[in-house]
Length: 339
Image (cartoon, rainbow, N blue to C red; front, side, top):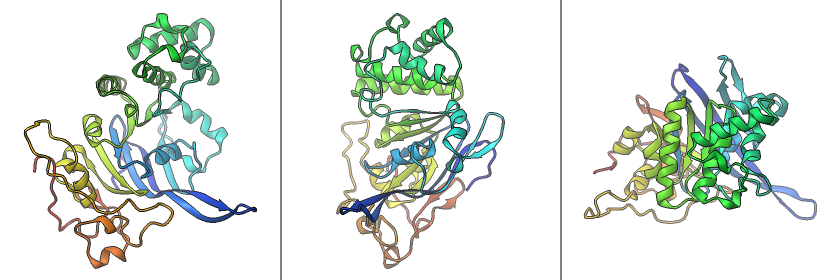
């Protein structure tokens, strides 16, 4: 891919397969190929939006990067604060622990990601205690500062999660994520469970914190309009594979993959008088248990040719900084935003 200057995270051919077991002896009869050869990079202080339909492997990719799952194959290279590069997929959980101070996650559901038996002070302060950063009065002062940073009143720190709204709970989760001053945050659909009006507040807060604290984000979502709002780069995922990746403006104006074109066509225009000319894909999303031969998108692609069912396309640089996994990406003139 790109030169490694300023790249904080590089994922190479990442695979995450889950075994399917059946029978009395629980024999392995197949695999769910949740992530099947994903490659991308993120530069320091930038936001990469990872977008795709539900079930395409976005969340699994994020969890494999953080070693919440042990990857089946591939490499995940992370550059630490001291400049050292670490291959995360091959180190032990003990070696991974210090990296968890630098790499953190915001979970999708603010209702289930917070322990209902702990107060806000304990939830936000728990990482500080586990990593030996602070305790006692020092921890409480740090929790108060973190609550102020995400727009919560520190006077509420002794309350429990059920006493807060969904948006406030996600702010609590964000404060917990920021507690160890991370460099890289994986935000797993952080606003999808919230009302639209609250989504905007949380997105604006996240964007403001990212710019002020110099954070690097992998922002996972299924809504292209949300990803457009926060991302410097966008990677589009389909059935366990990255099908296109480029800078946000370039990808939205000049898509090079037919699936990206279909996603863009589904984004509602800001002007209600503009008629939505949507590209409707036929058929169903293939199963990750038995993906189609050749290009995984070819059964639903309006531009498919004979070669598409036989040859697996690689993610290649179609033009500088614009990557696509389509055999005919250089030939297509696809519709972008505003076309």
